[in-house]
Length: 225
Image: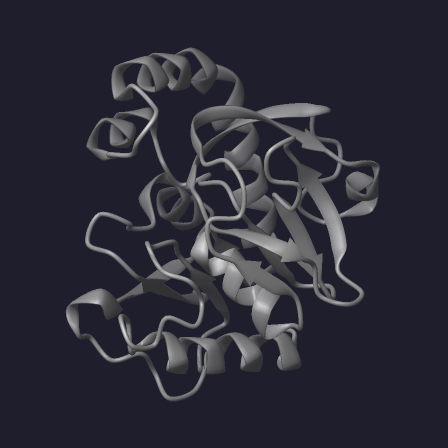
């Protein structure tokens, strides 16, 4: 059985349904609760890595000292082409480590289930190929990637936050949205300018469309591992 290192950056930000889908596909998850003081491994010995989200910028070492060793693991995965998937903060970290840019409070925040446009460049991507042209995805962020790394393939966008999904090399993906989050978790979020009940209802309505698509993407990632 293949082992996947999962770095969790906040108490509520676990692997969620994404982790369940990977386990269904035969992978074993090794979740490191870095936010709670559990040490991040000094080197990557796993067959794949998932970097989850959290309320930090990728370089917020003063607030979250485990981010520095996490960035080192991301760099190792990129160099060795170990399958790597980054969500929200995790996607931003991949972008920054690979030479892109991440900016705090970069434009209007995105919260709730929103339409994500799949770009033509995704047509031959191992994870994003043959997806519908527009897919609902759950968002919860104010920081954003503002420049992709050199050579990255731009896979998906929204009007407010262009760089919603990208690939670096052949085996590393970053996404700004949260494929791991079910609608129920939206009720736990607090942010200015949105009604949790309203965005929850929208996510529930979108779930029959979005969940099977993101489950398929998880299955494809597991197949690469």
